[in-house]
Length: 206
Image (cartoon, rainbow, N blue to C red; front, side, top):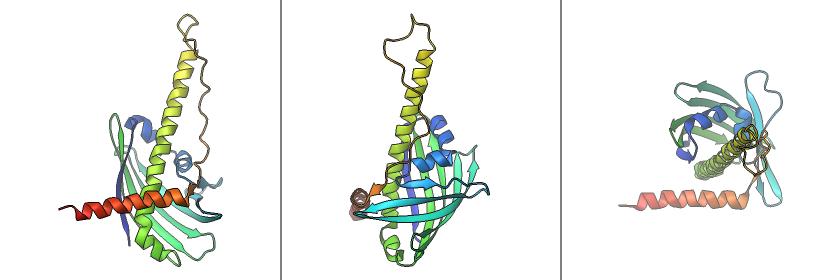
């Protein structure tokens, strides 16, 4: 069963990042090609993820349970999924821990298994694909925080007396972000290649 142990940094304070990580809908909106189903009434979060491969699209649907520890800034995830054609199935589990002060570091420890036609690919390159998606997620999360910060600043500025306000027009408040764009195969494979090259170089260092 392949394992994933990764770290990524979001250039924003922990007290800003953690509340957003507690929002599964917002988290999903930061993962390229991911969407949540509207019905989440039984405690399971259902959704799908799509990745473009040229003119075709690979789509996977699944569900996950989330358990939060606010004191430790930790979330435990248990998930399973199936590809669109029903030929491959996946199981995954992991723990994401957020630490830091002025910047936030996400530590991911987990494992996954895939059966069916995608098993060979998942075992050979699944970790690198996960790193590519994580890098995109971090960049999108940082963008959401920056946009929300700009919106909050604009609201504060609009509340000032006319003599104290700046001449710049107020920026409208930021709404719930739209889903992140699907990650094209070229971009995904490039990030995965960089991840593989990094591992290879690290192993060869004396």
